[in-house]
Length: 267
Image (cartoon, rainbow, N blue to C red):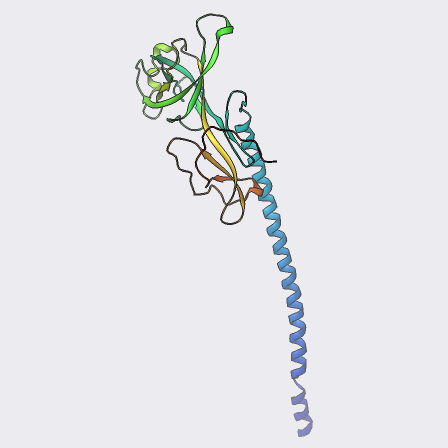
């Protein structure tokens, strides 16, 4: 009886060989599971990248035509063109002449109490920007009407009901419309505006911008954007880290805007 009990006690549990076989089988199963999980992870990452890429392509497709649609090659809007860069005058806003004081034009405030919108821009005008103003000229006929181009040499915010701002006598604004946060902008121009530019004439604002394809230190291609204001240094801080294959724009690292020349794209 004692011998039989000892034999039964020895048979309880697993032998070393059984444990080794079990461990090998478990490692094979675990390896297969990990392989499937890694494959799924790569699939999810690639799907997420594809979704982001399509979203960014749609953003670029909506942004670039808005800038490029207003370009007139015959009107001299293109400053520089190459196989990887394009500089041109980009429209960033419009307004209405509220007063013309000796060739200095003033705009209507952006916000009016009566609710109408006569001034709209994506950024405020600055020195170095240019504008085109509608010149009604001297006759009632349309033959001598034209858009005249001017460079902005000074921008002065004007508040209150004053003649060099947007006076109530113009009929375009009320005295309470002009505040420190909602001024009229007096624009000094070169050359000065003609005296034939009347109150109510339309103004279009332009700024020279540059788009450029370039390769960054991460070995990825990007679409860079830079607005060409005097004294501006190209920013090195990116808008995003998305490469050009996703068509997101970032601030361009390349040199500042070039002189107004045009080169043929490389073939």
